[in-house]
Length: 168
Image (cartoon, rainbow, N blue to C red; front, side, top):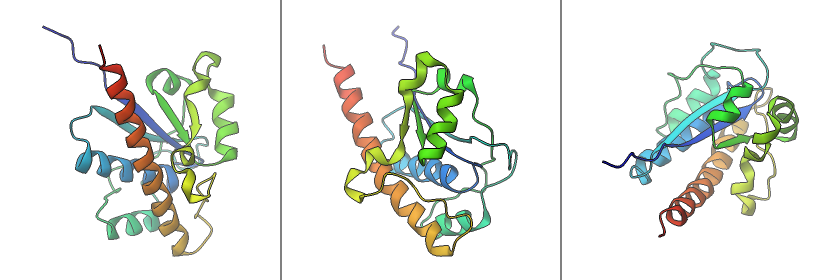
């Protein structure tokens, strides 16, 4: 009996793990559920700072996501660890500061797993997912729009990689 391949593991990372990264986790989870249930993908999120460990996503993130049929209320903030780089194939950060903070944690042999999420949505013109925490409701909508675009690109990339790995 063949051993099934291990799931592809994807981790989304922002600063406090209550706005952008849990939104990206929820968006990607919903997309995979709808459009890629044939793929085995583990999805999680974390923060580079311990400001909100154990807290649910920001209520504004939850409300914006809920308007699009995505529930975030069961998620809880946690801190990014060096072990995450061993466990996750993709560690996708929201901005340049998250990149620097995560790179400082990453074991050298796993640093290639670290990328900006928006690399998967180059047509948006955004390199970073802006932090909506101190802004208006429109910032949370923008986070949803950007993470949806990047999630689609990520899923396409994962599908292409799975197809390549299954070739004889």
